[in-house]
Structure formats: C-alpha cells, structure tokens
Image (tube, rainbow, N blue to C red; front, top):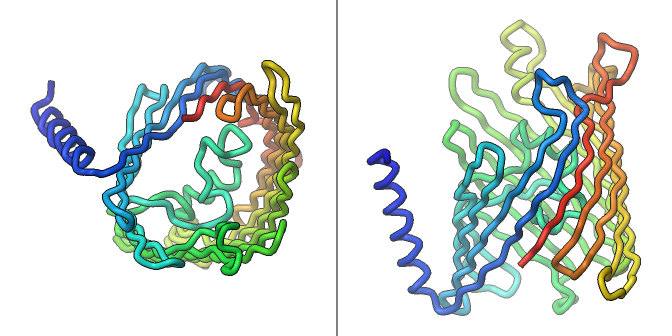
Length: 337
C-alpha cells in the first residue's frame, strides 16, 4: 500500500472517530441504489448499456442545540470510486439565520438544493448538468447564511441562501437564492457571480427564476436560466471575438401521486420533464431538447423502483436534423434510510 495514502487514510479515520465520539447525538441517513442504464450512443464512446450501483452515507453530529456538523461520503460503480463529498458545520444561534461553513452546495436554482435521493427523476436534468460544467451550482468551500421555510413558522414565508465561495482553481464568487412562499405557490430567483483568475482571467454571471405549485399530490415546477459561458468567452477572446457569451435554458417538471395502499405497492408517481438548453444565444441553431417520461413505484415511502425514458434531441449549426445520441433509459431500485 502507498505510504502516503495509508498515512492520509489513518489521519482521516482518526479524525472521524474523534469527531463522532465527542458528539452528543449522532444521526445516519443516505441511500443505496442499483439498476440498469441503456444508451443511444456510438460504441466508441462507451457501452450502450451498463449496470450500476451507488450509495451515500451521511452522518449528522449534534454537539448542542446550536452546533451541528455533517459528513457526507459517496461511492459508485463508475471506476469503483469513493468520495468524501462534504464536511460542513452549522451554527444556529438565530431564529431566521443559520450559518454553514465547509464544502457545501452553491445555491443556484430550484433543483440544486434537493438531495439526489429526493429527486423525482433518477438524475438531475440535462440543463442542470450542462450549466454545472460552467460553474453554476455544484460545491465549493465557502460560508453560507440561510433560512429554509417551514410551515411551522408561517409568519416568515421566505427562504433565502447567500454564499461566498472559493475553489482551488483560482475561482471565487457569490451565489444567492431567494424564495417567497404563499400557500401552494412559491416564487424563486437566483443569482451567481464567478471570478476566475489564472493566465486568462474572466468574470461570469448567471440568473435564474422559477415558479412552483405543490398541493401535496401534484407538483409542477417551471424554471428559466440566463447565464454567461466563461469557457467560450475565453476561447472567443483568444481568437479576437467578443468574450461576453451568454446562453439560456428552461425546464418544466411535473409529477402526480396516485395512492394505491396495496399490500406490496403503496403509490405510483408519474413524472414528466422537459428541458431546453441553448449554449450560445447568438447561435440558435445549436441546442439540445430533453424529453423525459417516467414513473416511481413506491413499495414503501423509502423504497422505490424508478423507470425513466429520457430522450435527448441534439442539433448543431451545421446540421438540419436533430440527433438522439445521448438518449437513455434507466431502471433503478433505491432504498433510503
């Protein structure tokens, strides 16, 4: 075994053990999932089908009424990899303000603040995956002040998140999200500013707005994005073009719950998702459309079987037709705990 790896692993295990035994209250949660994915893609880009398994183990350590830490580990079958995903600590000294410090999510958009195991689809939609590669969303080391709306405190009908973050790749910035809750409707807006240094420094910003309707059984969410592409901006600068390159996107997701209350099957949630991604508003012929139809079959509130038929239509400025490459079908069994 590599001596450096052994030393780092020993230090991490000792740190985790010391942290856990010093906490007053310990809570574990997470999920395990396994299934099959079927792809429409050239064999040169990978297999057209694959089995997968993955899991999450999250430990919450409560030291007193005001201080709580969180450790998040992930593992998956892609390269048989494991990842120490998050360490954070929360300070709750105020009724409508919590301070969180660590490697945490950047609050940009409705979906990024939802854990993977609580999504209504088996993965985040295509639009979110695309803009995360441009730096919008994802995780960074930072500090965030926030408040999450609770029906128990209906006299303060707001959720807000304000985060200052910094990465090791000379990137830093600010992300903020604000949501107003009124009955079964909620209205949200998000903003993010990125400052990237290095040999080709550049700044970028993105905007998001969303509307959500939820009445217990039916949920629908609409989102719109307008964002600056820093990577394409640098490329345009190097060839003498305009470095201010903006893209846009939109998403609609709806789900409806049918209660069965059978001995085996408890409920069925059909899901419909549509998304549109335009990487450059000056090149409207190059875009990607996602159309997903699926259903979640709940054997228990924490045990579900998911089916997703995810068709993606991709077009560039040099073609008159859409390609269905990158489309996929997914069958997944998930257990939450």
